[in-house]
Length: 102
Image (cartoon, rainbow, N blue to C red):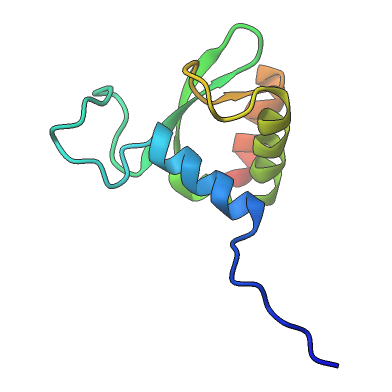
């Protein structure tokens, strides 16, 4: 019995591509309006109830703990809104996570 491989991208990969496209400067041209404080290869996210803003590298999208936060964000907020990428965690939890990723 043969197992057929699907050519469809996993849901997680598709969601990550949407995030990168909507929230980052990666691949943008100069005619696109972007915040000047977001360097190429980074994107802005908002953390916690106070929506503290952080600029993080796109490379963090591949980190398993960060992907877990993204999955929670998608379940709670979805990715199709205009309020920026908001992660549903306390700021001190996010800062602890960033310390382990760096």
